[in-house]
Image 1 (cartoon, one colour):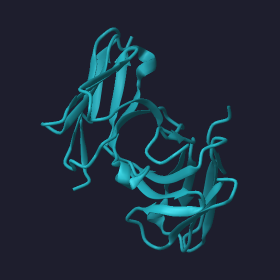
Image 2: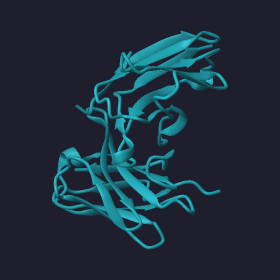
Image 3: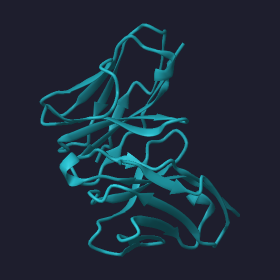
Image 4: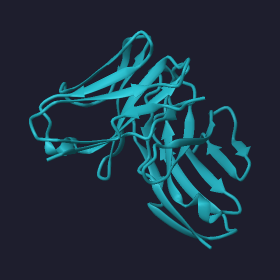
Length: 113
Length: 112
């Protein structure tokens, strides 16, 4: 199975709060898990990515938590800002398939001032 | 450093026509991938080219094709357009397969 399931579909957070988006995958051959941020009229932009040999990766306000046994990974946005309002996509790929990313359905994040 | 450039940004075509979209990757990037984005199906992989060779192909009909030139620029072609082909077509480039991919802003294709 190649699916990546993402939740929630939409999320509203107050400024300064924590935004949490979850993804689950089925294919245990996946070995690269990126998160993308997309603003209207723009292409997705790589935020942060993780490989399954680590359980957590932090870059600034963005943290990926990875649970290999549960086949789940999540994005945490600390101190959420109105400028973070965008659509977020998780994705997964396997090295043997090059750049073929399987994307989640997307989460529309709104951060209220 | 220039990003991934896609042309044209917007395109309106009539059902049955064909269309060619262009992608110029980041300088030095050898891998170019194409994705289709629609509200109903989300982001779906079309194909990947590396050093002028197609390395991967998604589950799209043969009407969708592509190619890559020696300078890594890529084009994708859709023949016999259908209304359902209306979408945002995104190109992404990377230095090598499996590394971080940078997306362009896409070409918005509308089929009427």
